[in-house]
Length: 527
Image (tube, rainbow, N blue to C red; front, side):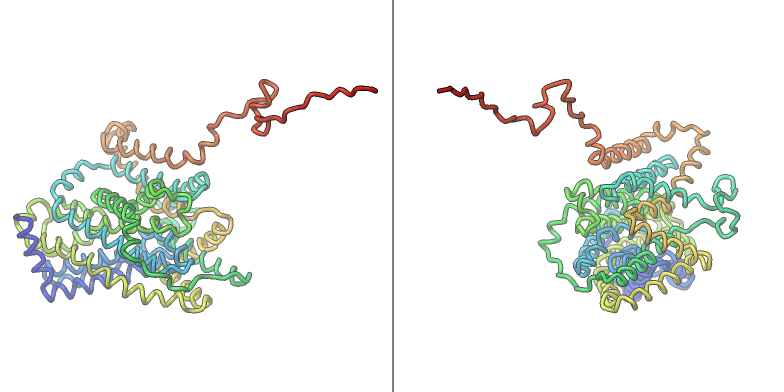
């Protein structure tokens, strides 16, 4: 009853006109920033942080929480409509969302994405409200080996992404891991794979790679198709989705929500790992895995629900332990410290009003996200009605500005253009680009967790298997790898046909199982 009473007080604080207006403003800012490639809602939160100095603590947290919730979803709008992931977590939305747009089902795809994201976010916010202490005690058991195991699970899951091409998917992923190692070694501080180029010492940013492979590569492919007389893109709005359609994909939404809520509570995992794993699990569990990547609704609903389901549970280690699980929650931690608030178990007793106002703001933001997302999506949907030449020019300009804005570095623009050409070549040769991007994103995290684990445990390699949680996660990763590659490896395990020279030919050749019956020769009588 105390939780319900505190939550009622939190709703009263969140619905205060001043707090509510800033919550809605933050939500709109987050959706727009997430939808613009290269801008990202994390940058929007960082820019907004100084403006929270003069705000009351409750108002400041509501404002930043609105940007957080809206921004996690916002990247899906550009992913679905123009195949440009606004955020790394929105990458899986390209794989089935954009094919739906090319089929003329953009409105249906956006409706599925918004509904699944809102459901996952609401479920995550409810878990944040009612299950913070138990989840916090679970998250406290995670150390560097567990973080390493979680990233390994995310990397292994990309093997199932490329349909009917697990070997090429693995090669693409390892190429992404190699690109992710460019820069300065995190342990010894020595440059590696920089080829003597000083600009490469700061590494190759995954956002720049993502924009180049998907945005620039798509435009080049679009221009080539137009030159060859092929139709470029479908511009029909597509039929709307109904309750019966949502009920049909409820299992996908529930699975994605469960995975997202679980992964979100793990510091360092975040929405990207949650969405990638949810897509891979859904591909195996839905029964439609052979069609994933062609516009399957389940392949869009699961990662959308998963990535927004991480928003609420990612706040659990922040509020209960003072551990930020992502860049967004780190900014929110900075805002709390600016206002003299120390997150931890004592915060629930010393400032319960603030805590439950944050809970209520997360719930309200996920409900209002449906309206805000539909408004922004309508603006972006107009892009589908413009001529392809103008659309391609708009995407190029947006990509160049986004690549430059990541680190205010002109060299990133050149890298983006280079990966754009590579994306076009990969698209034409059938080489999957998605595992490469996931490797660039998760590779540096995996390396850092691996090295810090060895440093903290005296170089003991067995620590990854002897610790119960990390060992369980690695076992799940191995099982998932076998499960993903089993369909392609099953023909190799079949027994070869028996040599006809060593047995009955009728049993070795299926065509001879029922040999034609020979008639006995007829004797001819002479007159």
